[in-house]
Image (cartoon, rainbow, N blue to C red):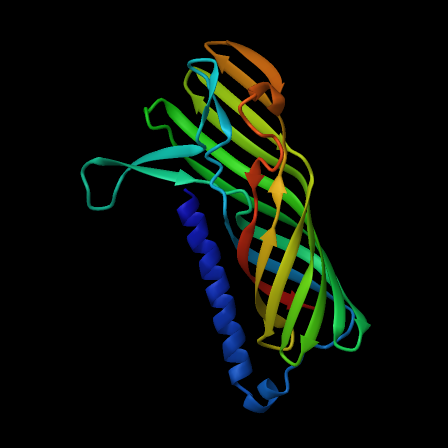
Length: 264
């Protein structure tokens, strides 16, 4: 379940923060002299994103009725700890969420000014049992992300403005059981968004920060593969075929995120 994955990444950020804090607390004088150095450096970054859209308006394909319906929600059926009864939980994925890993470089531009560029992978996913007990379901939202941000630095602080290019945003939805398999691939147009970011230096090589990204995806098409009892149907349909939907800015992939950056 996504909740388990969320916990592991939050734990990673918390542990990293504690380790960084312990290291700099060992020498208070060194801590007071920390500043963002304006020099060429590589960096790696891990971030947790909270998206603004839960994708409920994505038209999911109903394998039992050959039609589309709204609502990217998976019902996870399991026995809760200490309970003798099955309980149903509903989990959702978000465009713009929820984990990102990036690699990039920083370049000095002028005094107190720097430019940063990075490439990364942003994704969110949910897995679980179908509510009717017939099988399992899986949903994911993934995109390659290219960032370019200009920063103004002042001692241990820096603030940046720039853009984020999302390449090949894609939503996958699968249902599998003993005698059926359905897979829908929903493709969105490449998109360019705006970014504002703040970072605080916690050690010579490590900083913590927050970011807001404003971006939306246009819906292109969906490819469906539906196989049941040995036979199936495969087709692709465009967003325009749904008529009732506005294909432009179909999904709001804006997000607010917290990140940990290590420079070397």
